[in-house]
Length: 319
Image (cartoon, rainbow, N blue to C red; front, top):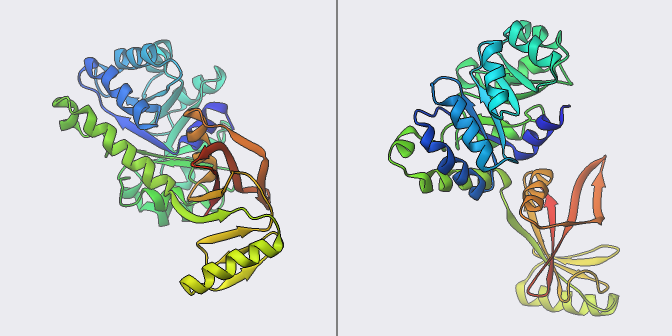
């Protein structure tokens, strides 16, 4: 898969925006970056699209900015010249797709039927836009038409919002979701960019679904661990579960039989998407401890962050 498209997959959500006034470009870009989502798809539905892409790219060169609703090769050239890093078309426009493929420009054409999927496959594409998603039968329909194409990933767009975002993202063949619910036109018209920032951050929080999994407590040895575990169990009436390296008290406490990371122990944080969460933390300057990763069937399950909170290490857990 193309590196830009891999980045889109790690971000998970793509704000799809119609910009009427190019002066909204910078505060809009700032709102996305501050909310933790440094990407945007600017649709070529208005005359402000080209300059908006240019102004966003100038302010935040590392921001992942794409051009949407691209209908011609000329628009591709204009968009890329302005700083667009990928192209999105509503359908499988052969001229647009062929030009992008020949010039190594990431492109995700829109599809809604198996015939259109196979048209796109002729160009060697492995990521396609499913559009309009909800109007075409939603997630159940996507599951049906994607079944014959195990190597193809989709970016559903159209009718995606906070009510169905998580359902789409949890389908393994969905790379990311495009949506405009966090970028309401009235907010831009009124300069309410803090509202956009808040809705975007809320969408990110919904995607990650962070929750406390358990508290880990370090002890010197097996006997010490059993003593602490029995004390907690008696106090809280929680069941004990003994493992090789620790004793669980209910699901809320893990009493380690040794001194491990963290002065006192660790905080285990569960998330819906551990790879996306790690990407988010790394973008915000929080490194990981790769030697602590634990995988199951080649997929990451747990890993520690290189951070200390009140004497506790922190590790992520894939739900």
